[in-house]
Amino acid sequence: MRIGLADSAFELPPRFALVERRMAGQAIDAWVDAGGGRVEGFAAHEIMISDPGGEQRIDGVGARLAQQFGLASGMRLQRRDGLAAELCAACDLLALQPIPVPFEASLMMPSRACVLVRGVALPIGGGENVQIIMNWREVLNRAATVRLRRELSMALGISRHNLPKQDPFS
Image 1: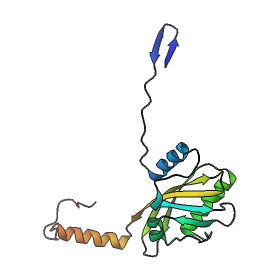
Image 2: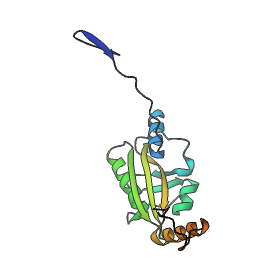
Image 3: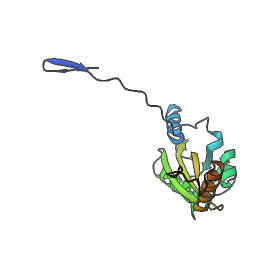
Image 4: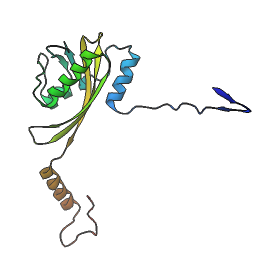
């Protein structure tokens, strides 16, 4: 594209292709490419929810999500707290306006680990159904971090008598 200014003309720089690396971003791109339909390729990380403005029932759940969070087909989402509350909030927003709703949350799991969740709720069929694509990372709690440092120090041969000048884990 050329833009002319009084006596000179210059070309705009080319658009650089931006490759989205986050799963939620990839899901939004795939949803746009699919014309607002169901997105394929995320089966292990998806939750299908029907009646997003009402009962909010899980119609399908990917294997990894079912294993990590104890979700199953046929369950009704409860608005109490945790992951279900985040999913309900995303569904509520989709019921108001059927556009992708990104979300992030931190959850305390029964194992006392903190799990960081990132995902996107995608309206399917004009918002009658919702496809949620999400991933997560587990963060070690304080006791697990201390235990890991101790085990790594032992493995590296670091003792009180042989301390390095700097802690290699800080």
